[in-house]
Amino acid sequence: MATEKEISSADETIEAVVTKPARVIDKAAKSKTGKMIGGIVFIIGFLLAVIAGLVNGYWAVTGANQTLAVSAMMGVMALIGLIVGLVNVSDKEAINFLIGAIAVTVAAAAMAPLASFGAGTVVVGTVTNFVAVFISSLMSMIAAFVAPAATIVGLKVVYTSARKA
Image (tube, rainbow, N blue to C red; front, top):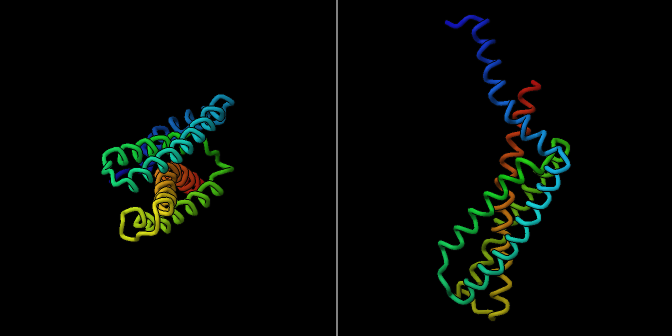
């Protein structure tokens, strides 16, 4: 059985391993350059989500099977989301960001059935099909961008709360 001194030493070692990289990332995120980079990455991610939604909507309406390309776009969105979660959301913004991320993710799930309009199951018109699929695709891409960021920010909040306890 481990002694109290050994447990305390192990706790300090774990604390150092976890908090040192977190402090470096937090310091970079709070710097003027870090905030600028985080803002630019967020805007790029959002614009890429809009473009990917347009492209995916076009492919769905034209009947093009681009599953691999859509998967690649989702992967890029997730990677950008991880970067945003690490460097762009401060402790003060965390709760508001998480609430917004929940709203976006729920809205994306609610709009997923719109994609069936573009699949030819409901013939309403090409423009209507495109708009329905675009909205569904756009929301899916934005959710793929926001969810990883929300995961990182959520873990930060949980870790900070657990440390204070």
